[in-house]
Image (tube, rainbow, N blue to C red; front, side, top):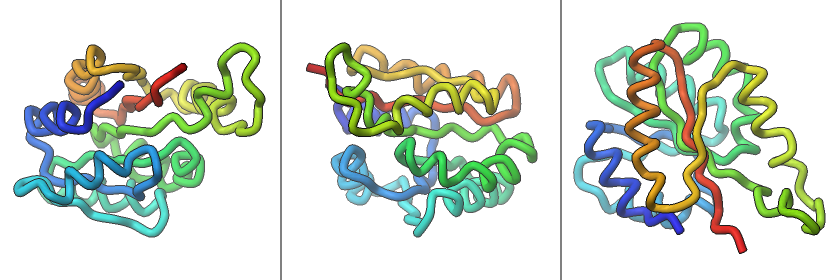
Length: 164
């Protein structure tokens, strides 16, 4: 299981100034702890596409933002992501909740197709990513920031819900 406080410690280590996004059930605990944080400002948007435009502008203004959304919201954000963070070469890291991951387990009913389309979409859009399954994977956040800095392009870290 991933602990919000450990994710926040990794964000502090990276000097994150703003977390921009749209809360969902999976990110609720993380957002609640971020709202209580004294040094990281949370900026909520009404749509995930706005998150990429705002985060890109914050970066250009000298801030160090991170986008926090769910995979279904990432689909909605496609054109805004492409037109801002990707095309502008902004080394922006996104933490993206992996809705529907459990439906891909053998024998699980396929009631949510979000997971089915998620990784193929990331690959088609040439977005480097890794997946965090537990606290042992928190170091992937550091790796994503390193990759984004090296390539001057966005990267993603997927937040995988606890599996059964």
